[in-house]
Length: 467
Image (cartoon, rainbow, N blue to C red; front, side, top):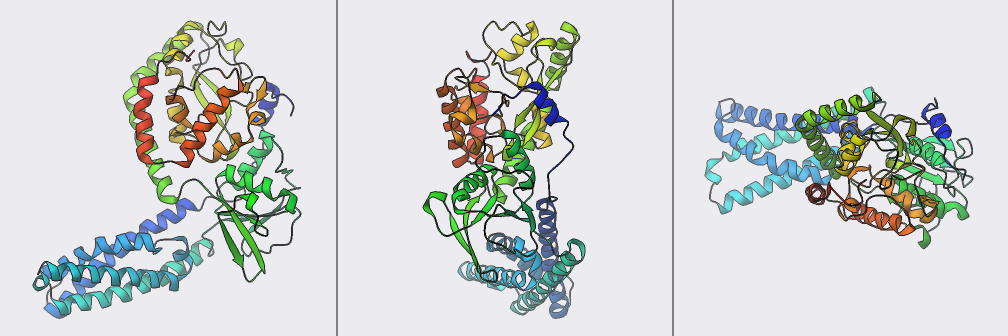
């Protein structure tokens, strides 16, 4: 591809077309799950209080309420794992009611089993508990019917975003899905063009399922792009080993079979944990480090009167562009927005304050704001400038798996950095070592590992390659 110039970057920065097709439904679903959890807890307490009033003659009689409180933890644990609070439960009230009743029966059985062996059955009124369970079952079913009605009324019944990309394959009439033509958006799965990948990333943003229909010879390329985007993706295809399929999905109504080629690196619970960790660490760091951040900003401003922050467009999750913040460490007239030239020892572009903050990694601290905005994570593959090269080759020309490192949000620190892979990329091995660490991190993500990387980062803030 052509060399990435500042002029080209500036054109992309100001492009007015946003190719995002669908609003995010995940937050909406999470709010609905939370409301259902709260409502279910209220149902348990109300029903057992009512049962106590009918049987014992006392509203919320302590023994009945003790039974409700004993049942709730077991019910919630089972319900969270059996799909009671899943996507299907929002639109299919019969499915949701069945799952809720299963969780209720199992939790009641477990409590009865524990009470029998601990000889605490006498602490409960069997009649009141039975009546409470019957009332709870009826209310749980009724609540699921109400939820489905509200979803249909408020959301038009739409609980997921589905996209079909037509790239010249067989027809795929997926009900309720958005349809686009790859040709209309100039999408070429075999291209290494980062601007095309950014365009595709915006199209796939917020999609819960993406189905691609394309000729046989393009299936492997599309499968690779869907993996890189970190979305749940399917290819309309006969089974093929080279695609790396992880499952098969048959649509009987359409008489079509698809191969599931990507599911995204992290599930919902993992994403919630990771985002919670990011917000907690970034928020705490911003509060604790604010005196240092202010002092550095003042020092930069006093040195030459130029801007405090350097904003550079980088590649983020789904190969989409985002603006990354750093403290400016170079002379204003020598700023390298494309990242064509890596910093070197005794670099004539770096200011006196810049040399210090680069050696100590303080120049990276404004990325805490990127983390709070949701563009970045505390831990993840480090984002690269578009013009970054090794051995005079763009990173994606060295190894095509480079695009796959962007299926997660980029990080303020990462596994590659704590292993010492920092500084300029002069030879191809400098890139492949980092890429190997990034892909290893993505394949084995855990919150415990993120915490460990953060702790190890403290030990490598000063590094011989940090200049």
